[in-house]
Image (cartoon, rainbow, N blue to C red):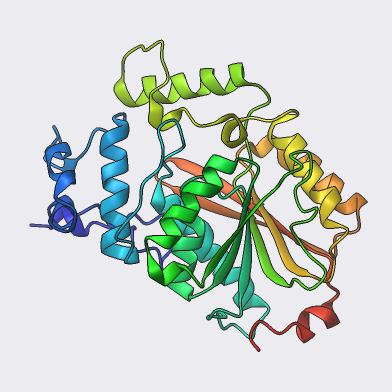
Length: 316
């Protein structure tokens, strides 16, 4: 008989530790508060109610303790509770991207620095990147409450104190301005941009997600899928945000190796490629990622010439 917990999810990155089904008994051992939430479903598999925000947050806490040595983590109500497997995939594919320019070797250590645009209140990307590859991060956001919560996570987990620094973007209409300073050098930027162009659009999408999970109609978005305005929507939506990011990235051609961003809507790729070609990106890559039935992707671009790429030093 196959141990169901060991069944692999073949669509996740091969280095992703979450490519196997969750071992809820093991996770509830490290975080007992998870135990009341898991049950055996009609397929005789252990699971939780993913439409229950408290269950999802408890699962995240257990995963962070078990796999990332994070003992103290929490987010305020109404902030996004990120699905860790998908976030981990982005980090692992970034590592592969860096390896392509480093003789096939993933650069590890604190000298490899990433810039997380829109770190949110959860600090997930830096946590995963630091534990997995010992990378350092700068996290930025326009939401001061989000920055303060990340600061709390960092101070309550001493391993993160020297690995992650935070910066509030005080001018919300800009992305990199006053964030990338003249002395900075980033191996990559990472970003999960706002998907929607209005609060109304974001609320409708949230309700669809809740209804799909619960298989019943709801008129109120659940907290887990609520999110703050800056996390879910902005003027111009995803394509507007990414276009702004591309135009700003031109100002820092030698300070960042790879600029990257998630792109949730495949139909936006054509416009993104057009803008990148317009601004003279030297190399453009699109990396697809799969999580179950969901296909996501991120676009990466660089302004470094082939010679400059070869001369880039990921470690000192």
